[in-house]
Length: 369
Image (cartoon, rainbow, N blue to C red):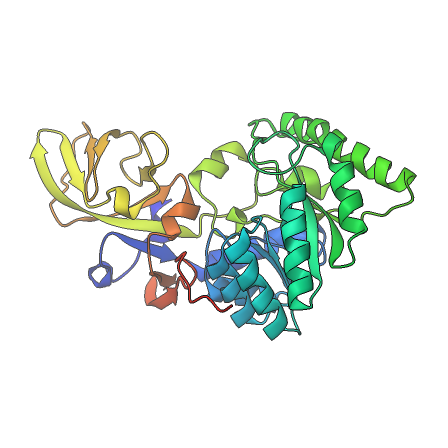
């Protein structure tokens, strides 16, 4: 695997660093389109990569609608000129005010977001009336993850309030089921279908009352394939663009390639069989237990500890590693890892060809109200 990521001029790389392989990103886009059965069902999430370069590659493939989680990501999508934007993170007051400002100043683009409770619904309605706009809303459903959303069995009242409000427009249902992670594909499909039954029951309830559900957005990356089998729902994978070890272990049959790799250097050998790399908390997602990366060539190393700037591993196999040697590492969780960098080296045919800026990594933006 190391040969797939090897850079010819390794001395041109500062570590720790993030490498992006555009040809692999393109292959992942092609695989997304193939699994979805075409571009019309895709509304990919930008939270993983946060880069205009990746968005533009998807737009070149014909994808025109995208999902995001932060205001910086909304701003990025506006600047890229996409057709339709879903802020899939229920806004609070200050965020909704900015969201409305963008909606009013970019009338050629469609802005939508989520709601999962009556208090937020009233807030959105009041703000819409005050600003002379209509706000397009998806009902966010909790079908088992217990992170956000309203339980489907409690959502009918929210639906009725939303559809009857002249300041608001019902877009459909949004379902994210990131809790579904069985390693066996058949088991994952079965679990996905079981947890989706309450959503189908809600749709039946709405239809029996004479209403319609225009669209349903389903899943993320682990449940991308099971939901793709439904044929009707929209699909919103995100990690599929860059891929990582965490999802690779969950979905071993996936067609997706690791398109983002970290580079790190050996900076010290403080004891026998103990090696220190410049890959600390500040350089890789650290919300999970060790190991947080797999260092190619040291797959069987024991990861002993990590601090802000250092990763300590124990490796007992005979070797000739020297301080300054460069190593390639695959992260287990790529999304928060990307956010630690302001740009990524682009590697094409083993050559460092420049950078892709990671424009939407910040939470703080200039607010217009």
